[in-house]
Length: 503
Figure 1 (cartoon, rainbow, N blue to C red):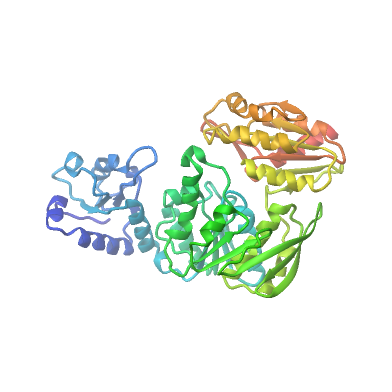
Figure 2: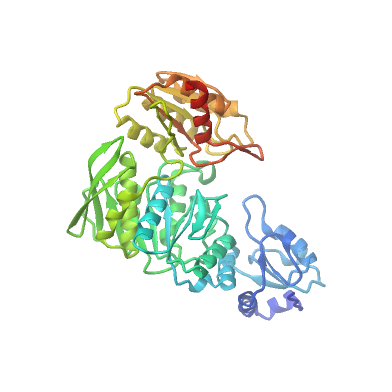
């Protein structure tokens, strides 16, 4: 138990805020716990009043004091006299940015301010998970110990736990990285979401490399417009510390291309762009694309090599280039790149549902208009007879993308099966109504709000020569209805439907 005494008012008047901060850092480095939830405060611990998405953390300072907080970290705008009892024993520490302060405190507590492992961040609308899996596979194959923090799981050799968020909260991030350091992990590949960057959950972390895959519409319910969304993504390059961090960008994407020209040092990758740049570029050419996968030619700094991959489609060709460029930025050699030919795939990313009937059935995590276009183009490239697509839109998320998702399916599928995804706190029928205008020009439409029933109806339609895509949930093992997370797997539901319908 840590106990402190003294008047924060007196210290403020004496101009000792800097000394109080240094003292707090020393205590935290020695083991003092830091909390952002006042309900968890134990006597003597530090409470950081975070800005909060719904309500400010300063509202909970009285509760933290009542529970015996020894330090309280708050922004200068916090009105002290309104809530701070004269008898309070805690010390007040003013910081311009409490979120950044939490990152510093986490670095002191977990010693992540002196990591020896390399940390690479991967952001972008689509492809983050696939790129992370590819880099993990490649670097593991060359003998490195690799950790991954991403949408599917948080893992390193000997440890794996399912992920609740693509990027966990700041304190947990530092704890996970500290555990990886103790486990002698060499490189960590972290998916970094736009929410995490906007909320600065990566505060206190020092990235050795940052990669952006692409920027297309998503999360505008949170970011409001594309410029703010892109600005949030860009923070991984501009605001996360480490002056010699390598910035890696997709030069086929206009926004990413612009970003690459503004960072140093930089690297780029491209399938189509032929521009000249003052930094190294990994360029690829698709030699063949079929149901068996991709055959790529890759060129970099005068060297050329080829890769055969079971991944399908042009978007995965870009993901393969992204992974190679990031691996090169982290010190891998051109000769190491051929190791990617052994990569088998990512859970829930164009994952084939095996069956004894010769049906081509896939599940995929595509849940944005651009992702749906990419995955359907990849499947169309297999020269299919008909493409049947099951899709839905998430509740309590960007409503403006719902008709755009439907339009993407209408333009590429022969039959669009509109259903429920994760409705959360919205009526599934209302969500489907938002999407319906995009299906105006669809060649065939089925509407079924029950997702399992929708998948079953889609399975009834397909025959050998057709392709069925069940899009939206990918690897997820649940369906969120209200606050309830009901067990549900697209892969399992699809396999069950095939057994039931086809025998």
